[in-house]
Length: 466
Image (cartoon, rainbow, N blue to C red; front, side, top):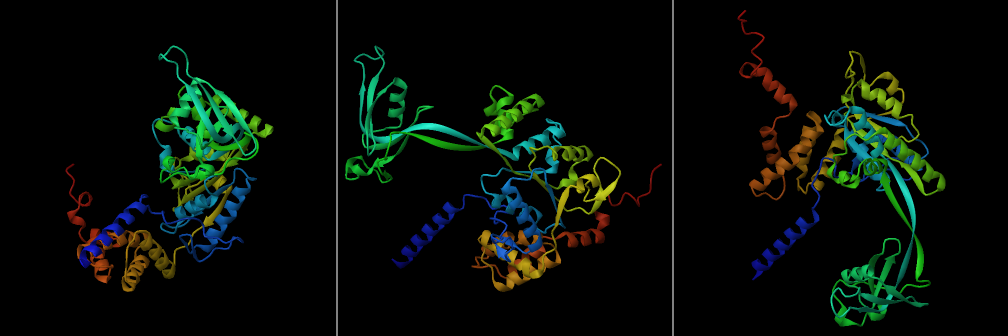
């Protein structure tokens, strides 16, 4: 009997594991924030971030700036060699800002599509990064249902259904007459006496908040998931403030065509005419003055920014000066390189006049200790058990080759380990995958040794036929 029990336990554990992992593991899924304390000092290892203290501190100062919402149109460049955590810092910024602040992420190459002009794609990205917080006041009726009477006419369709609804709070009780629409929505929501409901007066939407505590002994009307709430106090009618955050881009799309809100989901937004945008800007400014809405400047993050060409850069110069500009964060791993679309070289492949407007954060290469910590975090994220020696070896490999290569080996090694039915990844697994998958340096070495066998290498030294 013992083994059976063990097996059952095993099966249950497996199920639980599957349930919690709905998200796929991405390259940066372990990052939950910038890992700073309240004084904006970087903690050594926190929220998935390791090392890069000066860069993270700088990013923290900028997020603080964004949260205050005072400064529009500042731009930040995160520059550093490949594999030093530039995208990670941007992700950390997004997570720190929370759900409210719009954060639009794009790679610079996304701009070169055939449907939209480059400037249109950039404008859309900019507008995606600006949110409008709209306040609405709605009147709601909230109370406990005492009774519902619905009179159906004897013959169907002879007359409309009529009905009465009695609602009460702790202090008052009122009878409402119901029209056909309300009756339908009451039946659809399966409202019965003893439910506490809220009715939105503007749209006539009924929401069930739960059963009243007074009915908690009423066992026949109860399921396992029944939620009990207090009977509401005070007046039946209350005013309630609802806050929505939408991005300017969403407003643009909805107003640019008849079925605008469908275009939001299907994604074929097409060019949006400047007149539409101007009207919307005017409207938002009007709402701002009336106190109906506030503008929340968010963050636009452009990765691989050296892929933009000179037209895009001059457009960015202009766009950053408008008062409705988000904070622009760009990242690049290039040194001094040609600006795309010209023959001039410039640092990071960005024209000098735009570089002038950027605050530059540089990231440095990780030390071995930091590599080790990052690999620890990634092992945990990917659910891989690894011995100390294997981690040491991986750290060595990471220092010799690159951090990304070492991280890629984690999952590969755990698969090799599962093949030999091992409990945790050991040195032999790491060396096996190290020999199976070559890194860049060894691949280049291999090419130098065997270049005759590869295509296109033999062309230069082959005799010409002319």
